Length: 377
Image (cartoon, rainbow, N blue to C red):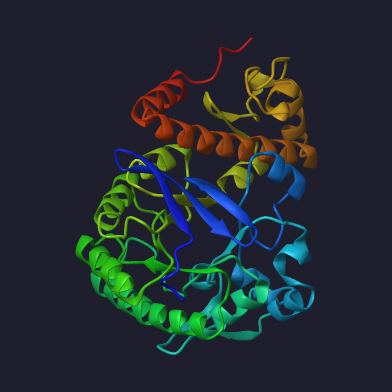
């Protein structure tokens, strides 16, 4: 079952790659960015707006969905796509990261993690087998193995213990997936913190187990960008060329350019919507803070050359007013603008790789960011 490969590598430019990932809910062109619909919804946005912005795959969060409304309830209602109205591909994480970062009174054992729900205080147990079962009930297109993520900085001994545990959990996740497939694909997750030899050992261990795709986890958790990129450089040369590679929880547009250049195919991050809710807009000029007073009397749009209607259709003064007034519409518009920017960036990255111009595309994109926003009026 794991030998089947739904990923087709279409082209290369240096280490950067384009590909196509086939799922039951449609194809995904890579490199791809997945907006995060934590609890089965994109905060402040209708799925139609997410789709129109160029998104064709989103991420759902196993931890939140298993606690509320519950995996069995979602399964009875036809799975995540029927339940939410999102009819495209969906990846679900294993729940492990949220258990480590959100849950209280958690205890990690070989068999499972037990934790206190942040919703009602109930004690919950999550094992690799239960994580796979939950993702099967959710109807995921891409399921993730359960892993333990250690927040950096950390002692090497703690990093190694978590990495070895994640490999054993990966083996159990794969066996559970094969017994009752939790989705169309199962990805393994390479851990190892900021220790190069542990990263390499994790990647080799995952390949020995065998997965449809391979993720790099435990990064973008407080370490400098240089450390993150160094760990990607340790792992990607080891991973199979013909399998998709997913950098979890990343990140900024600059992070994406750097990671694509190192052979990464998939990304997810809450940044477009979270920053939008805090008055920040991503544009070809870089990030713009709409709370700043310089925008209060500016009738110009964020970017009059943008192909996205919301980016060129609203005055900066109006967006500034919405943000400063705490109006929900401000967060909605900026979240929409930000997702559209990310998806346009991914489209342009794929186009540049296909044309063999990825390096020059990165140079031009960074030059635009460096020039910054247009002068104030």
